Length: 112
Image 1 (tube, rainbow, N blue to C red):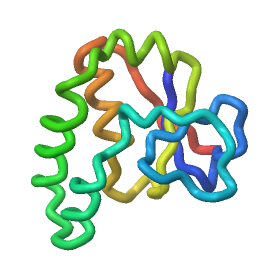
Image 2 (image 1 turned 60 degrees about the vertical axis):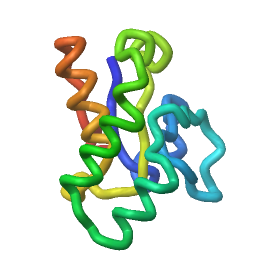
Image 3 (image 1 turned 45 degrees about the vertical axis):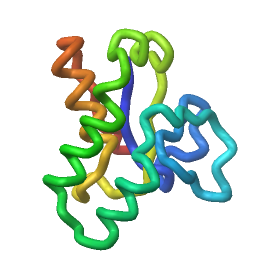
């Protein structure tokens, strides 16, 4: 099973796996850069906060180039981390939705 969360809640968990382009300085765990948004996707989003454009770019430039089954095998048991709080727009939820859609699994957000 794969889980999601953020660095502030689970950044020190042994199952943690950063999917951010730049994890926080304190973070010393596993990183999976293939799921990170590109510098250009992040830059554009920070400028215009256009969630629809971010989603379209993230799917076409990142997720469309990956195999969900391979990702699952490599990250099974991991907690996929980025910065945002549960209620904020975030690419970890796009990853979770993508995995759920293609693999017919559930990816849960860990609360504590």
